[in-house]
Image 1 (cartoon, rainbow, N blue to C red):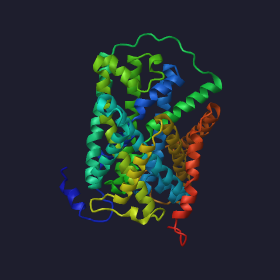
Image 2 (cartoon, rainbow, N blue to C red):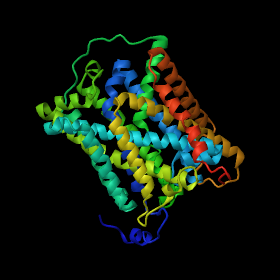
Image 3 (cartoon, rainbow, N blue to C red):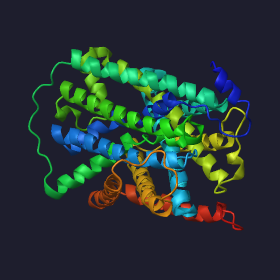
Image 4 (cartoon, helix red, strand yellow):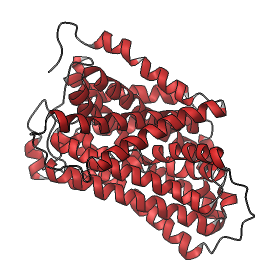
Length: 453
């Protein structure tokens, strides 16, 4: 891929991350990373839990507002501590090595898991489009994950160029699908009345739905994984966060409005891919093919973004001596190659193990929200401990917006545990066990002779 003169000059600087990424990449990684398989898989489950159009749209709006409030906080942290590595960097600085390790460990595993989950969707859809691939879902998923890792192996310019192109294709594909639904879809037929949950049952249904929505929105922090690689971070990080989050909110609400315009909510409920059913209404017998092709195209940017992000988390932890030193090595092209190799290996291992998508999504959502909560706590801690430190962006509405975002995170986590207890599921337990496993790993990997500064 072509490299501009400025970027090519900077790439001659060996052995460290390169400051060659602009605002366009920040937007591309947020859109590409956030809009993945979740928006295709979750509406059916949410409509089943909340069989009412206003509640259905309301939970998507609440999830979007939660992301926006969070973006105010992350923008402050990302400009105050412009180091690549995502939320791990902030939490380690504010709350210490072990808290940072917990966030880094869970973020790394969950991002690798997201790459695996999306790759499996690509493999599944490829099997439907090409019957010869129907028994090769896992193989295709693994090959796709490895292919994008190989592209990034060549350097950050290749990885960022792929991200920009695939994210643009994704945004255009969604806009085309939304426009087609409103132009050719026709209004949905009247739906039969549904019995919706009441009281505590309604609250539990809403919180369980919100878990899925949070997973679907997760990725809006994407740009802070590359803070020291972004040009003019004090300006471009907040811009990427706010424009990116608002863009995703708009796309998600329009997608769900388009679904409700084409299909009654009763036909959305319980469907694995409600957008596919809507595409059949819009495009007739070609609808399923159109939908699955667009889905595969849109998933590619997510896989590329997940590889980029998981690699930076592992790199940052290794640079701070909280993981193997070799994973902090950076190629002349600006890629932490050992970190990329290990991250890809974990993603492929998860693909080979294979889990039901919805279960994986709910477990990962618990990780994501727990990490958000620790980041929001970090804002309070650093405002108190380092009041004089330069903050190119200060969180709008602090401390109210910070407290609301933190309270929302805690409520979602408590609701997740309560929903598991009420429903007899173990998603939160699995997540807590995985988090618990971080402590012996921390003791094993952390140098015993000294603590890192």
